[in-house]
Image (tube, rainbow, N blue to C red; front, side, top):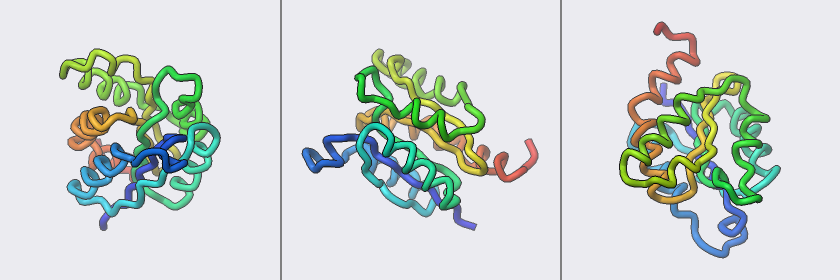
Length: 158
């Protein structure tokens, strides 16, 4: 069975058409390369729209939901807070591995990302940074573990 994945881009300016979404398509392409049926990227503004989009994606039964954007220190960056309202169990080491990968690859600002990874029902949710590089780096970390994570969520053996 081909699992579905959803990409949600969080950017008030991209949602308003001020500039194009560059990171969402990178994530969608990477998920497609991994064999997922990909929905999105859907672009939503910062804030409560993030939580609504996450709840809709979980209700739709996507195996994986990856967000991009809204994980920084700007006052409007609320993606981690909105994500924590939806996830039931966090996966802190996955979020830490994503930040560490960036830092290990000469992106010292990667440690400033406040991204969250967690599970809501049978859906894995991961926040990635909004930059193209952060999206690529995040998918380098996620690629090798997504199938195993989904298998675990479906009750597979360790």
